[in-house]
Image 1 (tube, rainbow, N blue to C red):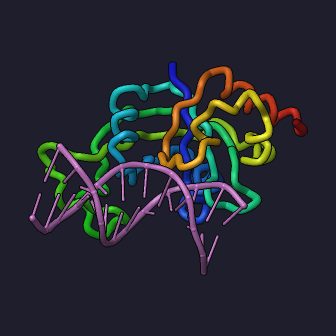
Image 2: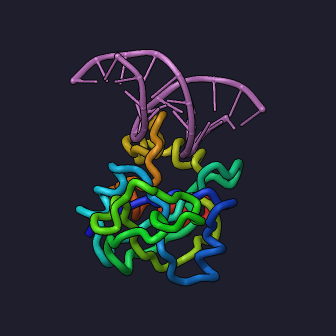
Amino acid sequence: MNHWIFKSEPSCYSIDDLQRDGIEMWDGVRNYQVRNMMRDLMRVGDRVLFYHSNAGVGTGVVGQMEIVREAYPDPTQFDPNSEHPDPKSDPENPRWLCVDVRLVEKFPRTLTLQQIKSDPAFASMQLVKKGNRLSILPITKAQYQRMKKLVHRGRS
DNA sequence: GCCAACGTTGGC
DNA sequence: GCCAACGTTGGC
């Protein structure tokens, strides 16, 4: 089983939106590295941390999810009215994929990026490295569990 | 709103 | 295949 972080700008789609929806198609990925991770490594049952990006003081990890459907063609690439249509994608051989996620838990508070950066256990994570622009990142099981622990303990 | 980082595009 | 221009991401 693999562990992941999925980023989303809360102004676009937030943990509260997912709480309302329960299960959601994670669409709009338009990056080849991320697509390949979805295709090759992501499996039903994988655990995922939900990260709010570009959220000011609210930037950080806000909950956990799980993968409930493995990679399949992202329908929004063929929808001219969607956020990210891709006219060059061939319906016979779709370029972009998505997965379905289910909310497991909204955390009682946000584990902020500041807190994550200040913990040496997370120093090796891609998330805290400068210039990382991937919307989906792998994380180790140990790091995942430590984040869960910190956020439930209330203080770190 | 600024700007650094980095992926993508397209001319050659 | 190189690389400059451009667009996007995301922290601050």
